[in-house]
Length: 153
Image 1 (cartoon, rainbow, N blue to C red):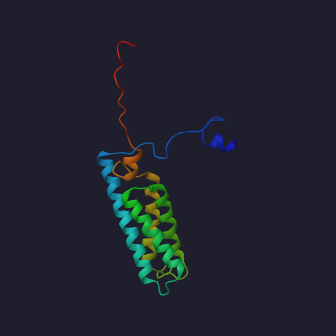
Image 2 (cartoon, rainbow, N blue to C red):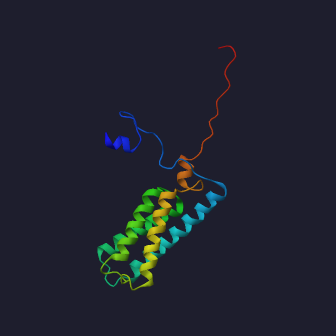
Image 3 (tube, helix red, strand yellow):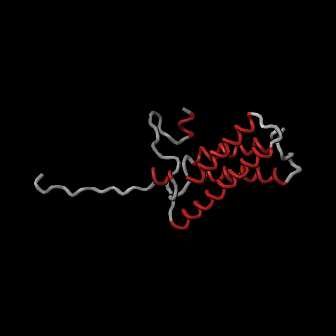
């Protein structure tokens, strides 16, 4: 009951609104495309740096690297942007604060880079993918063509 009021739903009804209600095109869509590609490339680069720079390549190093790389590629393509952005943000924070990290917390400039990337991926996840993405193609604007009625019916 409380949860339904919090979502502004009437009791017994569910909302069919999509997560992103619009997929902007034009200048705004181009800006989102550039942000997605840039942030995705940075995420992939930092994931490779994490794997290559780890002194011991334990399982968690590979897991965090593969998750970050996959999320970076998903951000570049604009596929499942919310999931990819939130997951990339969490993985970047985990890498930055991990005990065996190549970056020592607070004393390194790389820590700030991981933290900034985490914030940017979360912001991108909340902004949405834009029209020039896989999500925009699958769920974006549609043209509905209504055929003319026959005059004899």
